[in-house]
Length: 75
Image (cartoon, rainbow, N blue to C red; front, side, top):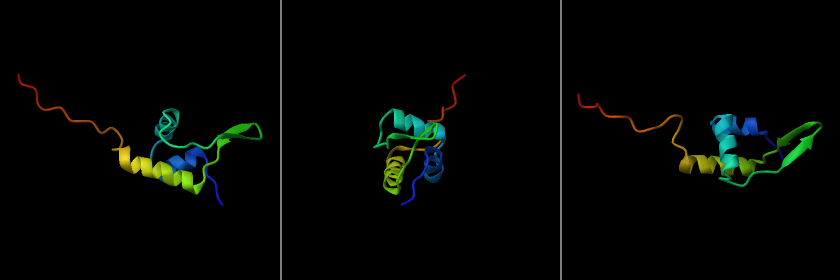
């Protein structure tokens, strides 16, 4: 069974690393625990956890910088 780092998960799901970390902070889905590998602390994501992130993205993420555009203002 293969595992992925947080950066790899962000690339697989096609969101920025910052967006994925914000979702982790806001506890939007189950997150794997931090593990120490040598002196580095990382999260090792399974395929099922990646699928959960992808499902969340499909239901809640509209894309980068999507905001309502302003209409023309009256002079």
